[in-house]
Image (cartoon, rainbow, N blue to C red; front, side):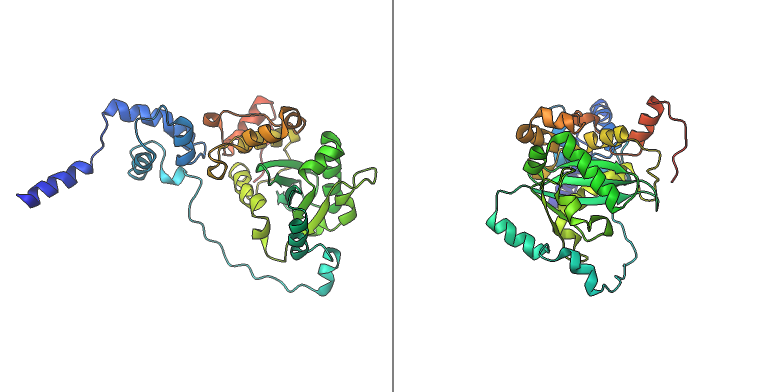
Length: 312
């Protein structure tokens, strides 16, 4: 009798403790957000007052394929790629980074712990085409992306000059007192990065160690969001800065567990103020409306009557 009772108890736990109409309500509420590449955690956090179950149960329902959204629709999946063999670098490769190494960066920050740090990188579309210059402010995890014509030093400096002019040199320095980036050829003009168009010092630049992208892990991790909207091998040539600003508004409105389930936009709004965010052309998107899929910019194209095809 004990065995039979245990079997009965185990069997009862395998079912769904919801009526069909309750499960349909849950599916209607949750699946559209999951299909927009939001995580289960974020969906639960932003809608928990409307959900008839706990976060763990929501995960279980997705695992058991009880909802329209499936695990394959989740932004995190196991991915494998061929191991990359790094080429040998010559000593001259490091000359531009003299006194600007990652060790120099750490020593500088020990002496200036309140100096704001910004991580900088680029995201490339098709080879030789347009690219994105990305900067993330460590203080609030807000990221901006600037469309550049080519992935070159001149284009990077032009983009930084434009951002500095829009924000003002003083505000730029308050957010980017220190810039940490990699040793790509597009970042090797230290004077151009550190000085504005009038020759006024606006920041100090330091370089990560070779093949140590984890040293600027914030901007690297945020590139995952960009790649959800603009997958690799997608051409950026049809894009406009307005389209990029729309994408970054959605990315910056996406809540993060490391920010106590607040979004970078909300944290930045508190630290930087609405006026500066407006200068960056960013707007807050309600969490339930955040889209992190290529459909976001496809809808933008349709809305703006752009008919040319997207090259992939």
